Image (tube, rainbow, N blue to C red; front, top):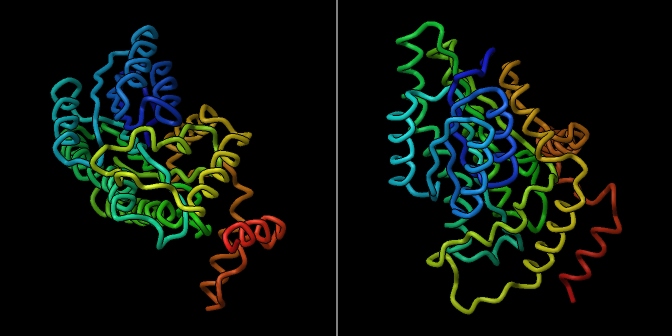
Length: 302
């Protein structure tokens, strides 16, 4: 856990919007050095201008987190400028929905590339740096936070590709926590599992690389429905990205592993766990709102 953030360094991916931007704002207020990465140049530029105006030392790079070389370049530049970071927020993420067999190979490559490999690269590149810093300085404290989702603890229908990616991040983060505990007391990890929060994730297709688009492909009925449901749920979220960012900093200070934006949603996770423990078939996800299930089935069967 980190008890004092002043003059410490934070690496934030997905820093151009949502949780990444809000964590950068808090980091700037706390006097941190900021390493900011995003795939969307104009959004990144805006964040950089705001953080510099707030007086924060900033290193910014346009990075596609799914790619090893740009992430290596980010890690090298961050180390050259500020040394080993203290807080690494592997946060960049994209969303996609639809029935799971309707996702194209390009859909899988895009979503797993950003959501899973982006976190993998962050962990792979920054953890050894942080461990070396801890070894050299008994006072060094570090923390890695990976952004998963409540979708990493549940399996909602019609958004399977996203769920698969976020389950992987939960698993990776739990293992990272255990692995770090084997070798050091100075560095720990957390996993952020937000529910529906207005962040811009439902419009992440704006940053999809050309080579991972299917020429002339039209969204399927289930994908259109998934997009509309996602827009509605994310857009109507009552918890803000700024509130979630504060939860992240509180969790780092308290060395709390699971970070939930909507603790009430845990009821659904408990139901899923009971399904697993009792080896019963998965519970109807619409049991609490049957009209939603009726509507979705009807739309998909017409």
